Image 1 (tube, rainbow, N blue to C red):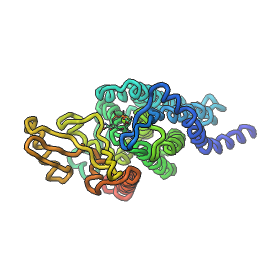
Image 2 (cartoon, protein in one colour):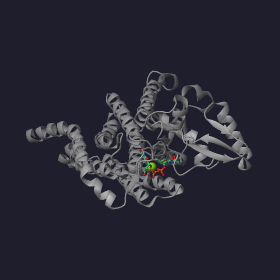
Image 3 (cartoon, helix red, strand yellow):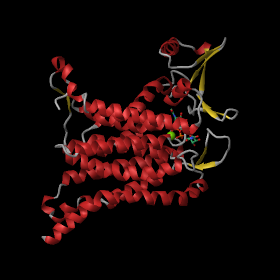
Image 4 (spheres, rainbow, N blue to C red):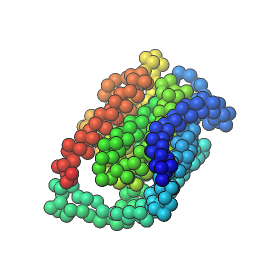
Length: 403
Ligand code: UD1
Ligand code: MG
């Protein structure tokens, strides 16, 4: 018994601290392996620079693998106490962790396939749906709670809670699709994909730590066991992806990140809070809708345009021929103009507007700027949104829910 007690104490001490060691491993592996990616033809050209240097692409697969392997190695440690007394082993929690890792693992594979094969957009929407299935099955077996608590101001019409049944599973599947793609389309300048993922991961970790005191402490400990190795490996990736990027993270990283956030949101029951941390991504998605659904022409790349004379980035543009100006297109352009959300240049034959991304919007509002300054500005916006999210989640939550 004394032996077990000491073992437990030791386990608890090493659990969270040592998960951080995967940061050093990722940091060591990236420079060693990146030439292999170029040899395999996995490279891209930095479109915001004045050179044609080959930059290894899909390096997110390295950080993703280290993150997953670390999580696998830590399974016996996370469940160490329960492995000693096997009769009380928490099979439910174990299934949750395995399903979470399986979904993330699926996304790593599918993201890498996307980087290698450059899949069409319809597949990009299908892949996360398939990868979220293990998660949904475990949710069904373990919780199957499909009830939404209605915010206080709406209760007079809708009642205290509403059971949406099967639609809740559709919501969770869509959350996985949204989280993965939302990061992927707020991208294209050095350090932005990784930077936003770091801010979101740090926000979730802070939220988990605050909530450890509450009655949902088990769910938040589960979330921490996933988020800490994720954040550690992502910090190492950031070192190599920051301006000027020595590696590109690829769709692999965006998919793994999105699925990781969706997994903790769903299984730790705070998906609405996760969505609050995604405010800039939600704004970017809504702003992008006309181009994503090809109502407004959408070029292959919407990232900002590099101007060699100024050595600064400017908003990139798309051209709408006036003969193709359908009623629907006209309305969208007019609404965006009234809301001052586009920069429009018109001549006899065509209308030229900026590509509809948050990155270009910042460039229109604040003027051309250098790539690193643009990344810092967008990450500052992400941090402000996190502060707003905490404000909504804590002081303001009492207006909407009993806290
Ligand atoms: C998404 C965006 C696309 C954007 C691209 C940039 C939509 C619908 N799609 O496409 O508009 O241009 O991401 O990642 O919004 N690159 C850089 N600098 C960087 C990162 C990437 O120049 O810091 C370029 C490189 O050439 C790299 C390529 O972007 O090879 C990667 O693009 P990819 O991830 O394949 O584009 P999508 O995710 O399909
Ligand atoms: Mg991408």
